[in-house]
Image 1 (cartoon, rainbow, N blue to C red):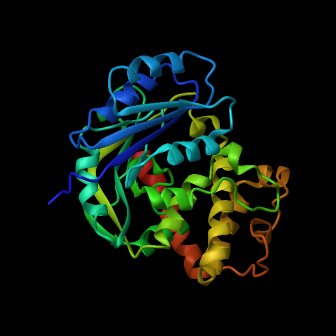
Image 2 (cartoon, rainbow, N blue to C red):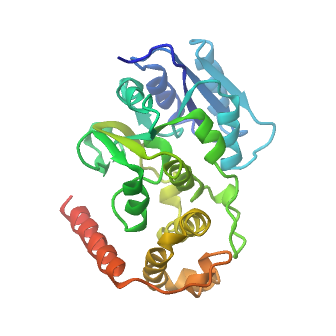
Image 3 (cartoon, one colour):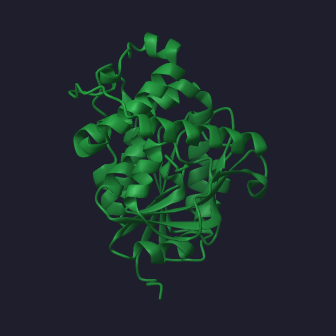
Length: 318
């Protein structure tokens, strides 16, 4: 039985999204689960975003809007959204994305299980019509899974999401597991790139709880457009940033997976040679802070290559 007394905070960090923000906000407010607050922090937009938000806030008291005095960078803006929230659970909704009206209703009862750290939903990527979008996340049937499956899924290039935009968390875990920056040898400012911090929310939470849940229904929709971070970013830069974040996590919390991660890094170094050279990432150990073990694992290599080929085939078929 769903406990309708639990407040859920929907968190929308925003910067210059005048084209999309109203549709995003309405998808948040239109939840069948009514005990919500929608927290929006505008990162000093230079377009009409703030004007639109002020109009929307007058229409619904559940919408609470804030604006930074100056642009503080994307990840610090995520953090302010979390800090302004007062719910027990938190759902990050990127300012150009959408969720279905039953997103909270269909995910909340899973996370009320104390063993479940987060709930992922089926997700599509769209340009015009959400329902006609391309499948982005579809793990298996709905249910509860071991957190180890998520961690190893990321490690072995299985199809698990890195963006928390398709998940529900406990707000306390978002507060704890959103890192403003990620230690690295090549001085990447993760607070400004905002690629890798998102994955660590999942990994750190998965490391704290034995289980996660998946809802097969497509409840999340990621909008593809020229100004989105993932599309604006070079593909190899995405891979490298996520590999640095994963390596940080494994070095600090899961040293038992070092050799498997080394194997992953071996493939990354092969794929992104030009950018690796520019970023001074020449060896496996360059992805770690202290680790000196650079041995790879043949069994992991076979599995990773197999998963990469399967994903390429599925993308081609799709």
